Image 1 (spheres, rainbow, N blue to C red):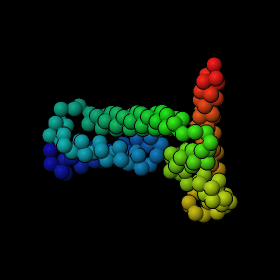
Image 2 (image 1 turned 90 degrees about the horizontal axis):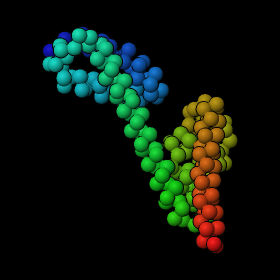
Image 3 (image 1 turned 180 degrees about the horizontal axis):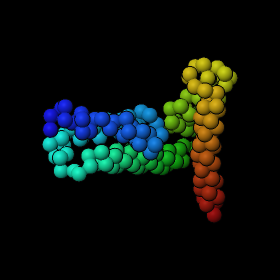
Length: 171
């Protein structure tokens, strides 16, 4: 299969593949990356594509698998990071609360980290954050709420762990 045949058989479906990937992954950049990876793999397999009865269906299945693999990989990473954070934070003493909170903020996803830092550390107003980050006001508020929730959950876990450790040492 030459480049022109590949373009007519596979590349014509790129917009449909992108929309499908976006439906699964939600994020435009992730969806675009997924489609690009699939296109690269399909180009490497271009000489075997004639084996498939429906190339479009094969492409859609490939994009679905790529998207699901990305979700699974991100979940594994997030689980590892969460687990690592709890372990590393419990090694610190609760007396270092400010440093621990700053570590928690630094471990947040980028948008949440930036919004929380600007609001709670730098004391910016919501309107100023909207300007600085070029985000909508509702997006800033949602990211701030989620960031605070995550930090609160992590602090609660840490303090609960410390409380059980202190009380179990007294027995």
